[in-house]
Length: 143
Figure 1 (cartoon, helix red, strand yellow):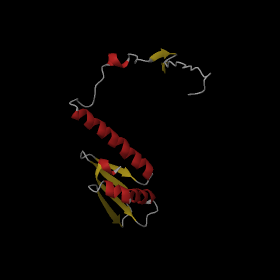
Figure 2 (figure 1 turned 120 degrees about the vertical axis):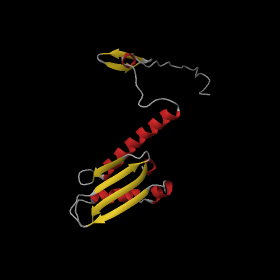
Figure 3 (figure 1 turned 30 degrees about the horizontal axis):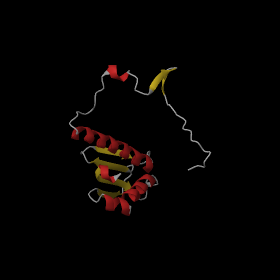
Figure 4 (figure 1 turned 60 degrees about the vertical axis):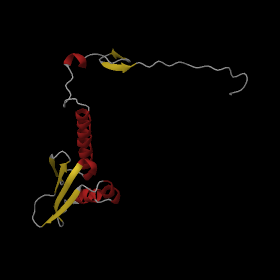
């Protein structure tokens, strides 16, 4: 998860009962394996004394900043959203490295063409599989 991020900022009041998600996410970020794998990701923690809800702010490697409300979002959901965004960033970079524009525009005519190995049946695409049975003369043993 940290490989997609350049900075993580976690803000919470330690006495607030809504901090569970922040603390769990902080534990994931501070795990030895995560820190050793991606030491360039800065993890900052700010403990507050006000009544503001806990927040997790992440900055992706491309500079985009995303703020998550840690009172309403479990740490695992935040992690999954970061991974989804990170995979999208990897895909975008892969296309740019190959000299393709992003986002990829697929002409509408191509969207309605069936793919090889599929057929259209009852309003959905169905994969066609061909299986061949191989027989062997077993009269002399399996080998």
